[in-house]
Amino acid sequence: MDDDADDDLASMPLEFTAFCELHRPRYLSYARVWFHDPVRAGQVVDRALRALAGIWSEVLGSPNPTAIAWQILRSTVAACDRPAPGPIAEHRPAPADEDLAILHYVVGLAAPEIADTVGAERASVAGQLRHALQRMPQEW
Image: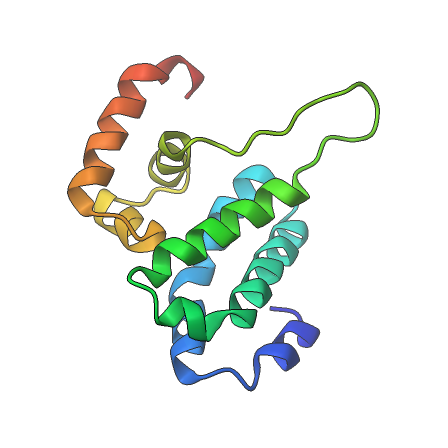
């Protein structure tokens, strides 16, 4: 994270720091798919982690903190991935199957790692990956 982000998050609990150390590399790999500039990808991930830090105590008390954190990342990526001004273009966040396919086929994570990253059941991730492969192989 950048120096300002480090300062903002320095007072966070150890659980948050550990969460960031575990998930930030995977979040960065995902963001780099959308933002080919590594600096921009890092800024987007840092923005998502700051948003997560702001509600960490509620997230930690939820049944699935990892899934909430993943949704914050996806929302942040979608908000930052706006087309340049010009003709009207709608931005739609990637469907869940596409996210899983990106994490598997582009980032290189196995189904168990993806499940840990997005806060989903491993069997569900494996099934969704099979479904995504059947639906959209020509795009990969």
